[in-house]
Length: 423
Image 1 (cartoon, one colour):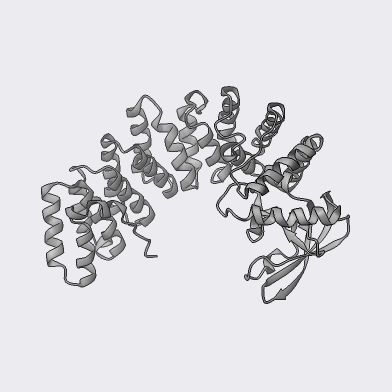
Image 2 (cartoon, one colour; image 1 turned 135 degrees about the vertical axis):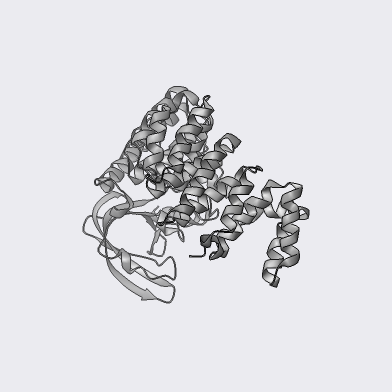
């Protein structure tokens, strides 16, 4: 029976790693899939030509046949050294193959198969994550036969796309637990709960209005800069009555450190009926150099997403203020130029001309490129004539090739141009 389970585990491993970009790597999924789950510490490392094997000491068995105090060696999963894992408390999802060797669950994507104490910004994160795992194990126990049968169907289909077919009562029990765990701000459990509700085929698009209202109430207290917040914002995107009030959204904008979270927050601001209030509030923040650079960058990203010409004067003010400042911030300027690029308008031309003549731009080919793309997007006869002139007068083949991409004959290309930071 143990050999059969091990064989199934190996087959499961192959199936689970077939789709590298799929989302089945949350605590919710791994609690169903992993045959062994242990909390302990990586105490040893063995170098091999295939990478580093790590020895795990099990301090607390959560699931499976590895006992407390037992040490097991997990097979290497990549060529990179694993020294940083040593001496760290960890929860690991793994299994034992028929040959007796132990493997991480999502080999070779093993970073999804363990949780370090530093994976959480919450101080009690690892305890919360263990609590989350045990909660799902308790829910799943009475339904083990059905869950294993559905996992077997996924193996037969050899695809992650099959999430299984379960009774509504079980799905509702899972949802209730995920909503509970989503409130544990700053933990892997909260991020994985929001991710599962957002992406799992079992829950995606199936949350009720009251459940979305719960998510909406949790968003303001979610951890800034963490994916849990981005997933929560996506969940309530189309449920306007679940959106936090605008002053709360502005407070979130001020504390945010993640571009992804600001992007999701912009979807909520787009839905606000009083657009002028949004533009004035966010625009004032963008142009106020008393604000921290990250706050101004966030505000400019919102203006970029809104794509409203009424917001351009605020972007122009931000650019002019940055050019006049001694403590010039290139990241603020990058985002401001992106905002001009996303909202082409003839009123951008004088500000861009000011940029072209400024020493900060003369000394930075990256900033020049960003400004020229924003200029090209205006797409008037006057701007296109200037671009053709720059193309003809280019003094190097590199610049000639660059301006060629901005000519009106290459409108699709200039829309898709990516400019990388030079520093």
